[in-house]
Image (tube, rainbow, N blue to C red; front, side, top):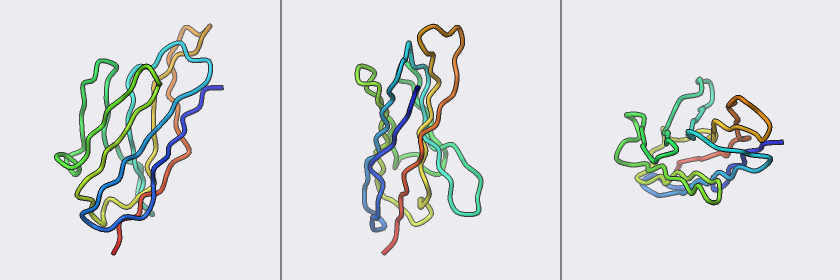
Length: 121
């Protein structure tokens, strides 16, 4: 089965930094775009950052200048470097990838289980 697993979440003080990682595994033929989403308590899931297979990035306005998304195609990983963290960044962060499996003719979206980021004094 194709799986995405996030890591790196935790408790951090306002103004601090944190780096999230996501690793894809399984019978993977290829990975197209990948991204990070987050969901705060009582709110809907929102897009944080995306990165295409060619390395083109896009960010939500709320994180521009503070977050950086990158990927390591050889190791099937995507990262989110978060700096100048604010309390409003507190959420469960999810990794997403558009992936094609061996033997499949289509691409499908996969989600990780999420990792909690808490920004508090």
